[in-house]
Length: 328
Ligand SMILES: NC(=O)c1ccc[n+]([C@@H]2O[C@H](COP(=O)([O-])OP(=O)(O)OC[C@H]3O[C@@H](n4cnc5c(N)ncnc54)[C@H](O)[C@@H]3O)[C@@H](O)[C@H]2O)c1
Image (cartoon, rainbow, N blue to C red; front, top):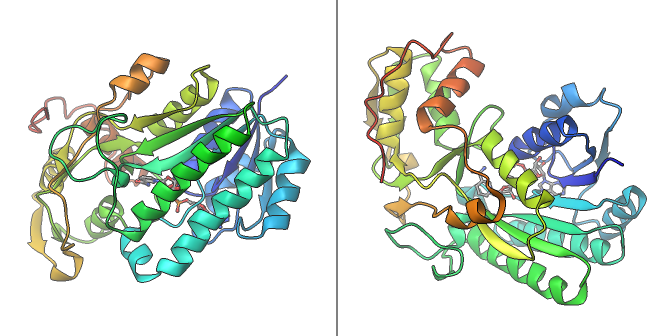
């Protein structure tokens, strides 16, 4: 029988790619979303699928959340719903804590009362790691965040560990995502920003362009989640990244190469983030050992797919050689 998978936040950026992947793999999928950020157009093409269903519910509504979970009886729960644009979270701490922490609490309580659930996969973040220049290891890098978003996610991870004790039949995976990019991104991160400028100009007003991040293509994230849900590993934490890091300047160089355009970066002080860390990169040895998963897209391949999806380039194949240095 088809695996029944609940995706909270399934109308969002990562969620709708995951929903498509699960349907392709024969799952029966229920998306739960309040459409605060998620878009109906993201799931429009899935609505006709016989194994897809949608419930418009807010996780801060405990009764509605309990009813949705009890009615669907999922085997796997992917909890992706959250407020996660860091500047917004810092400006709206109460809303962020209520949405992210109270939201997962209601969901976990619903899971506790629903014996069909076997696996709970939580979308955590690399932002919970303390600053360090080296690749982050799940079981070694100290955890501790200085922004409301990261703090909310640490609290959420701790809640999953508490429920692990009281729900012995459920395994919990805290999947720590690094910087995700790809088609259908909902929040105003750097790549949607750059794509917006590219439509009109070769000049890109950006904030900090030197800090390096681990950029992972969205369908690779969906495949990592699917791999973790299908594996028989006990409860654990895993990084979901590529193990390579690039600066925004290097992203722009790669886009310039793929588009054949001479792009110029200008400094926009409004986008400057004061407490920017210089490095944030994953060690992905653990998820590879547990599941065999590795990301399929290099940065250049992912950016080429994104630019094609946006109609900015027609075909990325002729741009064969990269000037982007292979990151450590
Ligand atoms: N995108 C990234 O680079 C990134 C990096 C690290 C972690 N994450 C985490 O991955 C998850 C998915 O990220 P995304 O980029 O797809 O975000 P997104 O904002 O596109 O998707 C989140 C979805 O959750 C929904 N939602 C929010 N609060 C809700 C609530 N109370 N009830 C019901 N639905 C609600 C939104 O409408 C949206 O559709 C998030 O938990 C995020 O914190 C994302």
